[in-house]
Image (cartoon, rainbow, N blue to C red; front, side, top):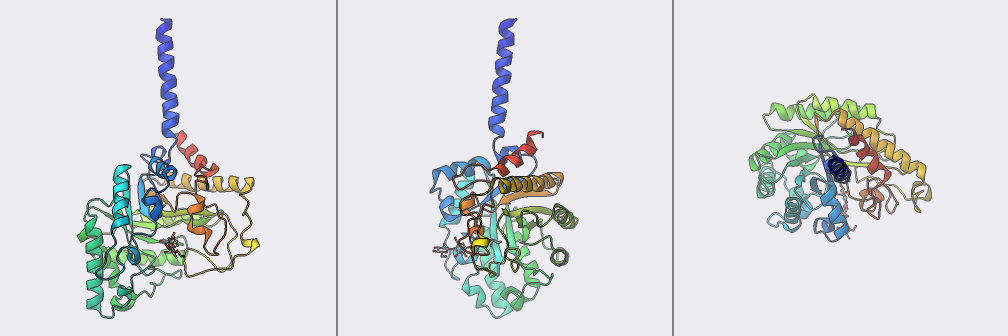
Length: 366
Ligand code: G3I
């Protein structure tokens, strides 16, 4: 009898340890709730740093190229495609049993010059058709989802006056989604944008998505980028937008999440990279490390945000962090270049931060 009890207790201890160890990853902890992704630089896609490569494989189950699948890098000239890094991303995802979210097919920024030179409807339609057919077609069946159109709506809700809008009018939006669906019927198709909790912006996005739906095009989801601060937007503002977008009958993804802890110059909001600000000591207060109270505030902010996502996990399909560790983040150079920011879940030594444990904690009780 005594031996049986010892065996049973040992087995229980091993199971408990295994569960603790196994659950010590974002992708396993959030399994069954929503996908947890990250954006990867060229070197991260090529696994140049084995420590980061192991961390990415362990923690994330959906991978996105931060820059390498934007048209200016993937399709720099009308008859030139550069597939190496994108191909490596898909191979990496396959190796780590992760999915790929493609970013992005149609975007006014980092746009190949040949698109900008199209002046007639016929030429622009042909260029969009060739780009989307070739890119989405190459990875058809292997892409979980696409940002089909990125950042087409201004803060006041009007459509951004991109070269696509100027040449084709708003029909370019439905065209992009119809082309993507034809090129890869399996991929989920998203509209992606920043500052998506603003009332005017949200109303403009809703108007636009409804028109895309009325055109008969397939649109599966709306991506809220999630470039947020410690206090803004509020949880209530985020929730209002999640529910408003979901009411369209689409999924909602948080596509580029980072929580900025630095002072924000008054004139900059969202992620419009054309904005910039002068770097000053006042705007760059944590060069020598993050004070404990800011670490705690960021951990609480991440916990509150993920608690909201879990509350609405029936409509949230994915949460992607926009980068792996604080040193990789674009927020070290936006809106002021050369600042020391701390927006992500892993520090510059790839160690999990308090914020990482705060969101894992939410799933311990699952
Ligand atoms: O790779 C070159 C390097 O060779 C060169 O020496 C260096 C000189 O500055 O530039 C490097 O390219 C930079 C690239 O990031 C890779 O680091 C570009 O200048 C820089 O503009 C580019 O910034 C990216 C930004 O989009 C602009 O496209 C950021 O990494 C990326 O995080 C950011 O991501 C966007 C999303 O795609 C859309 N939503 C907003 C988000 C933040 O702006």
